[in-house]
Image (cartoon, rainbow, N blue to C red; front, side, top):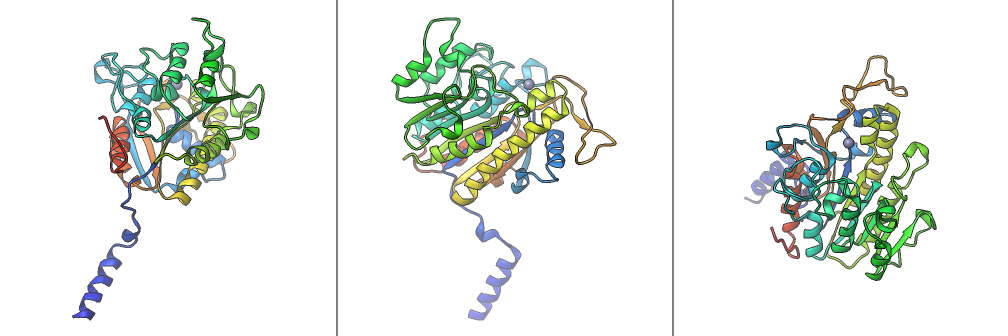
Length: 370
Ligand SMILES: [Zn+2]
C-alpha cells in the first residue's frame, strides 16, 4: 500500500514539474513599469542592439493588452493619459483624462488604494513628474496639459517617493504664486533637486518622504546625458522597501521611448529602450531576492508605427515609421513574481488594474474601498 502511494506521488510530481514551487502567497509589493510608446518593434530593436538580450526576457509570464480608449470616443488610438488612467483606475476614458472617468468625475487610483492600506508609494519618470503617465496615478484633472493643477495633487495625495522632472510646476508657477516645494517641505517631505545634488549623492537612508527633481522642465534624453532611471529604480525600491509598511506600490516610467517614436528617430527609441530595460533589470533583481514582489512591465500604446527594415543588422537597425503619433496595435505585458501567471493571455488594458487589485486584496492587511 505504501509503495503504491509513493508511486502515485512520484507520477503526480513527475507530471507537474515545478508546480510545487509556484507561490500561493499574494505579492506584498507591486512594481508597475511603463515604457511609454513601447511596442513590440521598440522592444525588438532594443534587444538586437543590446547584443540580442534584454532583462525583459527574464519574465516568463507574457500577455497582450488591448489599449483603445473609451469606446464612445470612436477612436481606437489612445493617448498616454487615457492609457495610464486605464492602468491606474481600471476605467477606459477619453484621451487627455488624468485619473478621471468618461464623465469627468474622479476615479480612485491604485496608488490611492495602496495609500489607504498604508502601503508605501512612489512614482519615478524620465519626463516631468506631472506628465500624463505618472500624473494619472496621483491626480484627478480633466485634461493632461494642466500641469500646475496636477502639481497641487502631490500635496492633496500622499506619496513616499517621487523622482522626475518638472520642478517649475511646483516653484515657478504662472497660474499662482504658490511655492509647492515649500509646502511639500512643511508636510515633512525632503525636497532635493539636480541643481544641488546628483542623484548618486542623495542620502536615501534618512528621509521619511522624498521628492527629487531631475530637471526644471523635461529631463534630457539618455543620449544627451540623462542616466538616472536604473539608479532611481534601484534606490527607490530600497527606500520604499525599508519603510515599516505592509508593502509598497511603485510606478516607474521610461517616458521618452514615446518621444523617439513621435520624432521618428530609431536611435532615440533604441537608447531609451535599453535604458528602460536596465531599470527593469534592477526591479527584477530585487523581486528575485525578495520573492514577495510582483513586477509588471508594459506600455500604454505603440508610437510611430515603427518597423525594422530589410538590410538591418544587430548593430545597425534600419527603422521606418508609418506615423508620427500613437498606433493601435496590441501591447505586450511581461510579469515576474507571485501572481505573474495572472498576466498571461489577451485582455483589456483596464484588466491590469483589476488583476493588480485582485492580487493585493488577497493580503489580509489590504483595505479595499472598491
Ligand atoms: Zn506619445
